[in-house]
Image (cartoon, rainbow, N blue to C red; front, side, top):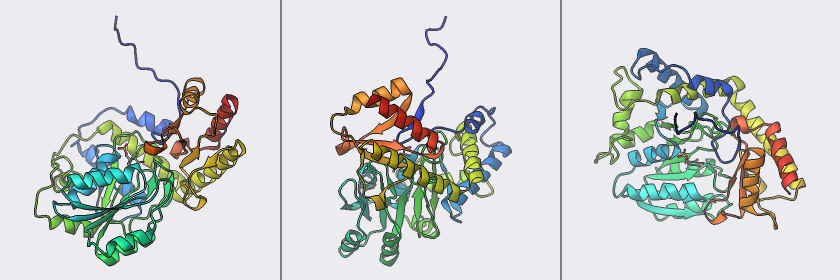
Length: 370
Ligand SMILES: *Cc1c(COP(=O)(O)O)cnc(C)c1O
């Protein structure tokens, strides 16, 4: 007798802000027998994964690898390695995740200047320009796809401003990555992090990152040790690159199997085709939701295809409807975060969860409930 029954989960349809549905091939790869994390076969697998990260970030950066922890650890990796006490940082905030970056930067001892936009809007590059008249930051950090609001932040103008100001550009691409264009080299991004559980459709718990030569030089000029041992790149990078692979921590071997297979799925589809699929299914969802009377929160030009934020219509109870979707239809969608709690829904169309069938299932369920 065992008081704990065998693990069994419901067959959920994941249409929230992540994790998204995983491809069956990814789930199968997770069950591959373990090998040692310094086994030459595993080292080869790390090299392949590194190339896959470079391809999907559209970068040649040699310092490109996967942090063995979720997206937030990628965020923290970028900031703790680039900021020292007393450095100036300009952090753009247009939702929860920009706020999290500012909090981390402050904990690094940086002097943080915040440029804020109302939730549901993007940062106006002119605000950044105005802020740069008063400060000379070491870095500018910004969220590309703000999952708390559904806003896609244009980056090119702000990237140019960072370059002109001699500041590094740090970008959160957790939700945009593998669902819409993210061009690290062409857009002049110096440090970028993402997650695996959104449009890449791998299990959560890993964070691909990449650093430009300029970012590496800034790290080489540090006068103080990075305050985090685990995330200190001077230590981690010997685990991920170079001839001598030194033990740093034990890589999450099974999760890396799943990640590798998720990348194979992405590269087989092709990035452009994948972005087009996200865009088309977003338009289809929009048409269907608008026919039911839903309104989008974000102006059309700034909407994320993979994270659709709609206002909850009057007369519909947030918690009851979402729990009916989950319990009766096995569909998960996201509620509002922070100041949007109870006011909006966040409907994800990420990676494997971005299909016409997913949209049809959600719309049919909503019609029955409403
Ligand atoms: C999900 C998300 C994160 C955090 O990722 P975790 O894997 O939950 O730590 C950071 N930024 C954005 C924009 C996200 O959507």
